[in-house]
Image (cartoon, rainbow, N blue to C red; front, side, top):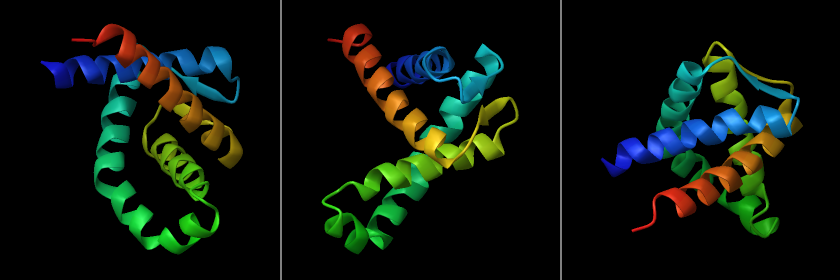
Length: 113
């Protein structure tokens, strides 16, 4: 049940991003649900591998390279899912940062035990 609630919170966070950034657009709530699912799968499977492979760059930049990895994954999902559009790489980095802040805030407020 908590997994379903987290999925819905992430979809709501994705729907909020186009109101704050005009370089990111999403067509519908169904698209937001699909993007939240794909983004969750990509972050679960690919992100740990990328973090390990880019560990030297992450250490050299004192952890800031993680923002680049998050932006690349956000951009990749935008290229995979129809109806989810990101204008460019830096828009993806900003969108990923905004997405993480909004989803963390919503999950903190709505999913407290």
